[in-house]
Amino acid sequence: MMAVRAETSRSLAGKAALVTGAARRLGRAAALALGAAGVHIVIHDHQTLHGDCEHVCEELGKLGVNSWIVTADFEDPSDYATLIERSLGVSGRLDILINNASIFVPDTIQDAGFTSAVRHLQINAWAPLVISRDFSRLAKSGKIINVLDSRVSGYDWRHFSYILSKLALRLVTEMTAIEFAPDISVNAVAPGLILPPPGKDIGYLEGLAKTVPLNRHGGTRDITDAMLFLLQSDFITGQIIYADGGRHLMEYDDGPHTDR
Image 1: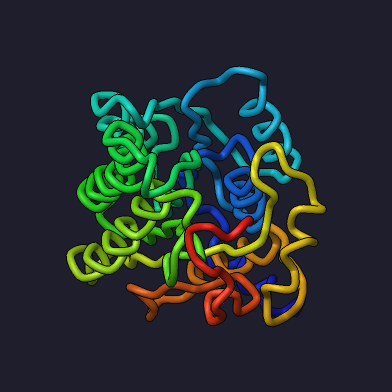
Image 2 (image 1 turned 120 degrees about the horizontal axis):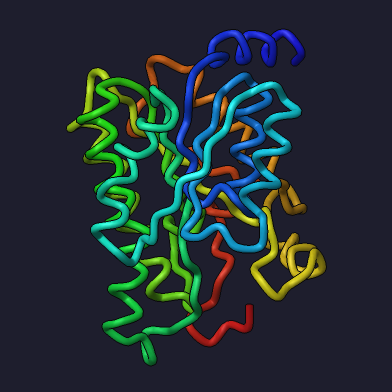
């Protein structure tokens, strides 16, 4: 294991990555994991309130890598249309793009509205597409990883607009893998039970462990290890790694009225 990690560090050290939504949760974990591998990080957030971005910068500094903060509101096309250009402006280079930022607002087929669906699609799928296109045009070579959700293999009855947007991002992943080849690889990681949703605690995940073949929930390390694997590979593109303990293989939901 140590030899693999050392090789990862050698292959990634000195590169630069833009991580969207890097101030909190999985985005923060991704930024720190890449930083530990020697990657300089452009930290994106939609705003710089509460000092979250600054805290990530401090932690990256302790790892011996450089970091910069850029903001872009993914509900404002004119804002995210310049994100790659501005990121290159501060970092000087970009080798990696992690499309992580997303929203997760509950709705069902019965109560989903057009506004909610479009908002999810813009933030979770369209903005990543625009950013990826700009990355391919301006960075010219490198690796893109999109963060999906293990339920793209099934359904999420309580988050219709959200799962619709993640299904769209899966399609973006597959089509851009062809479009951007051979100089840019595009892959995805689909997390399962990793972090409790906002407002829930770890007990929420523990209560759902029975729905996972491995009979437990995962952690952010499971996701970042998958990302590092994809980033050190030079012959994988268009793939999705389901980091979910096998949950996507099971019928874990009984339909729209299941209490989850």
